[in-house]
Image 1 (cartoon, rainbow, N blue to C red):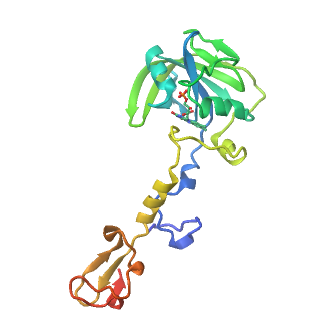
Image 2: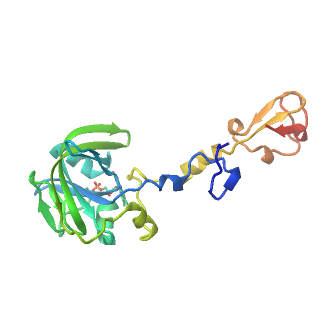
Image 3: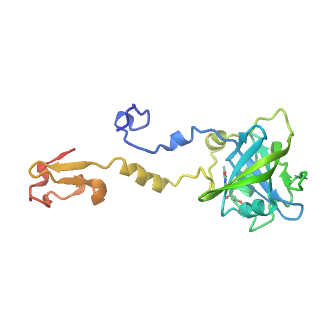
Length: 241
Ligand SMILES: Cc1cc2nc3c(=O)[nH]c(=O)nc-3n(C[C@H](O)[C@H](O)[C@H](O)COP(=O)(O)O)c2cc1C
């Protein structure tokens, strides 16, 4: 049992170990992260761009290994980050966040600027951008964390506010696909949370413990005819522990 009173829907009896809403209290921005050059450019929507050191200024981008852009960043060793404005169009979110550059040229028809390394920078709905050279790559399982040293940065619009993940989720009703590090597999979560609510019951005659998690069945769902597998006592002789 948690040593605090949980304000969630289960209130004081909450035994959940994994609250989705707690994860959403971490704040993020939303960005188009691009890589490549004038001929081969591609980009994807990311909410995981962070500054990790000040001197030198280094930024990390977390990119799913299955993203087409991952291979391009590895090949070219550079990436740009377009910081999106609050009212970024759903076209940009759809093109860069839900479709892959394997299937079409995402840069075609976009307003693009090329950086000092020739990396494409998507200007549509961007209020600022960064250009980075990759100095380190960490394997985080499903994702690669690219650490890039800043080469240049520029402000494109000083009046508009940046788009946050919270605003995108709550006001725009936006979601994130499987490749996003913050994607939540609800069925998996339900299983984890269900595990936190399993109970144990003890036979008052012989002390045998019925463990719902081990048996993968709730004690309440056992038929009335069920008896203790050790001493044969009735179901009603069990108490919750
Ligand atoms: C709101 C949102 C946030 C996302 N954040 C990330 C992220 O941080 N890292 C990641 O690898 N993919 C993230 N994605 C998923 C990619 O943008 C998506 O898989 C994209 O289609 C990959 O494109 P690509 O195959 O052309 O590289 C996010 C998508 C959305 C809509």
